[in-house]
Length: 176
Image (cartoon, rainbow, N blue to C red):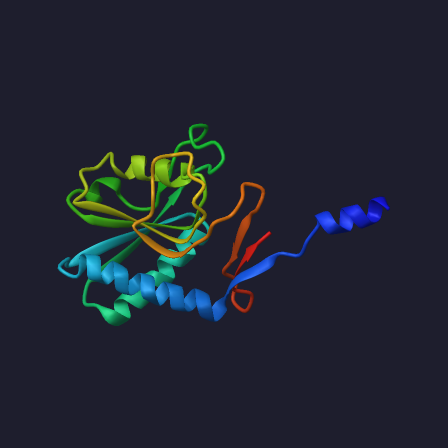
């Protein structure tokens, strides 16, 4: 009897987006970024290390196909669980962002902690503008931050987890 209860509690992850759907969302997001920044000569995409950087790279390629804007690609690394325990690392020269438009990219916005600390770090420079783009917005924010550009908004409960896999041939978004 215990085994049956355990089996019911461990359910298979639900596929939310497949590779084709992820690509469609990214194409739409790239067009939205372009619409918001079409007057810019240069735009910096800053990916949060890991899947945020992978998404920023893909968005950069898509933007290059649809626009004449010069796209710069950078990365920001931070401890997502405890951002104050270690310094943030930025791949470029932070002061080079002064007066520039920046798009901060991550895979999932859950509590907002990662994007809040990454935004705070970038705002040490006088940016022209800061736009936040996420593939999935879970809508469980504990911090006052929201994405400007979203691939998919999901209403989930706090026990559910969103997993994004961007590995070639295994691209998918799951809800578990």
